[in-house]
Image (tube, rainbow, N blue to C red):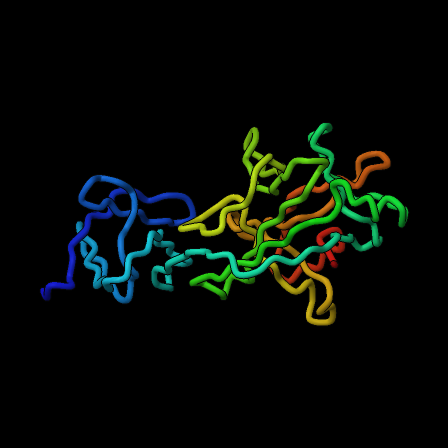
Length: 230
C-alpha cells in the first residue's frame, strides 16, 4: 500500500444499504473524499484523497457500486406551492397540519404560512434528482418540512427551526425534485430522500386536502395528487 491507502472496518449496515465506517476514535464517519474501493471479506479497502469530507456510503442496488451523498446549499427560491387544483399549500403549526386551500389574493399578500423558501442543494449524486428542502415563516417563527416515521407510517411534519446549510449524509429534510411528466415541465413531484418511491401528495379528508407522503405503486404511474407547481 502507498501512504494514501487506508484500511478501515465496515462496522454498521444501515437502512437502504447505507454502509458506515469507524474512524480511529470510533465515530461513525469517514474522512476524505472517496475515489475508488473494493470490498474484501472482512475489511473494506479504500483509496482516499487528502481533502476532508464527512460522508456515508450507499449501495443503490446489488448491481451498482457504492456512492457518496453530501449536500451543500446552493440557492434559495421564494415560492408558493400549488396543487393540481391551483390551491395553495398552507402550514398551520397550531393545528399540526398543512393542507392545500383556496386562498384569496388578500390572504396571499399577508403570506402567513404559505410563502415557502425552497433551498436547493448541490449533491454528489445528481442522478436521484435535484435535492431541495422547504421552510416557511409563520408569524415570527420558521418551520422546516421533514419526513418522519410514526407508528410504522411515513408522514410529513413541520418542525420549528432552520434547514442546515450543509448536510453530510442522509437527512429527513431532503426531497428530490423531479419533473412531474415529460409533458409537464413546469410541474414537479417531490420524493422523500429517505424512502424511494414515497412522494409529497394530498389526501382528501372532508373538505381538506391534507399534505401527506404517498407511495407510487409503480415507477411510471402518474398520480395527479402528487403534482406541485410554483
